[in-house]
Image (cartoon, rainbow, N blue to C red; front, side):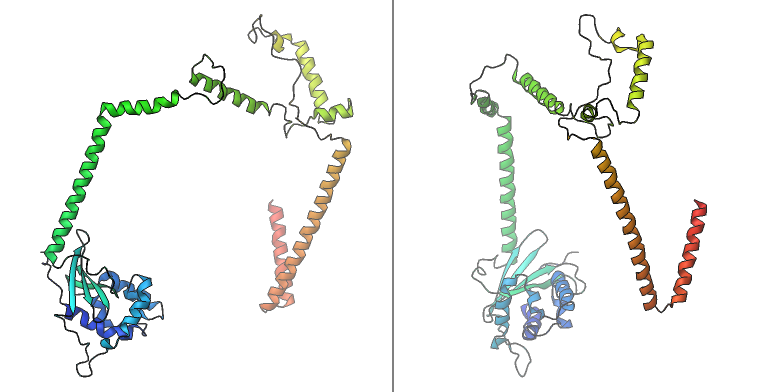
Length: 380
């Protein structure tokens, strides 16, 4: 059964808090007796953050960091000093305390306690099922300073706060229903459809920027033809590109004359031509199904190779230079590998000396590993 919500007992909740505020500005740890009076969220915030920091825990009571300095000034007030006899802060709980209530949502009810004598504003939260705090009841949710909007916050009683929340919720629901109904009517009205058609039709009637002879084809077909033309021109630029893996360079063959440096290209071409001459039925020009009689043949007897758009004029001297460059690179790689092995061995020996391994033991380990490499070579 849910506990009935009653006004908070300000003295029971706030007296321990006021007594601990002066020490909170210098102490990094909160008093254990105060933790059950805090809301579960604020309690967890104070416990976790104070355990990982040496700063005073007073700033943890306020979520707005801009009010931290004002809160520190407020707790230095002489009025917060405990009475020498009773040890409590002297407060007239019936006249010096103003309480207002506000329901935030269906599950959150807050109370704002204003202590004008000390310039403090304390928000309380109604908590349900708080076992550490002793069950359902009011808990301290935040401690801040007074500002000008405190008097207009919430209502004076709990029923007034509940009625305000219900009225605001009902007004929001009516507004949303009206908005949806209005939108639904506008979408189903034929007049609005006509307005939309007129709106989009004005773009069809917009004249072109540059006068031109319009094609009799519909605009959609013109766009398709233009797209195909752009695609054909895009791929056409690669028609004369020399393939990277093609061993035959036409420019190189032209410079070297009849001397071909490709791997067996002349022999393969000659053999293929002889084979086609001995078997005319395999010649593409004699295939009946390849081309109609009234059309020009599209096949040629020669093997076509793509030509590069531009040539660097490579020759035999370029080939020799490439081979020399490869040989120099191979020699440099071999020297680099040897230097790396030598440096690695020196580094391993230094590491062994630091670890207390003497030279004889290090040599024994190296020989053992070399013998293991011999076994690996035998397995391969």
